[in-house]
Amino acid sequence: MDFIAAPSFPVGGMENWGIVVFHHNMLLDSSEYHDDAVDESEVTVEMVLEHYKISKIITHEIAHQWFGNLVSIGNWSELWLNEGFATYYVYEFLSKLQPELTDNEYY
Image (tube, rainbow, N blue to C red; front, side):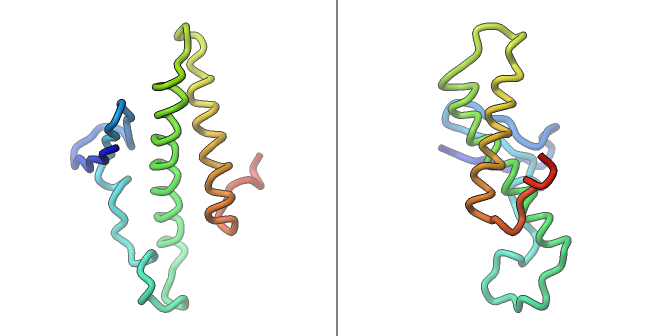
C-alpha cells in the first residue's frame, strides 16, 4: 500500500485500493514527539495531540481498505456502516497502541 502526501489535497485523507492520499499535514508529523532523542520534559500537549490526530486519520483510512473497499455496502443509504466500522476500529486499535491517549472516555 502506498501513502501519498499532497500539499493541496482538499480533505484529510482518501482511501483507494492500494493507495491512500493524505493532505500533507495529516501524514507528515512536523513535531519531534516521535523522536526518541527528545527529553520527555520537552514534550508539549500540542505535540501529543498532533501525533494522535495523525494516528487517527491514518488508521481510519487503512480501516477503509476493508470496510468500504474490500467489503462494501449495497446501497448508498448504508454509508454509515463504512464510516461506523472504520471509526470503531480507529478507537479499538489506538486504545491498544496508545492507551494513555484514547478518546474512549467520550463514548
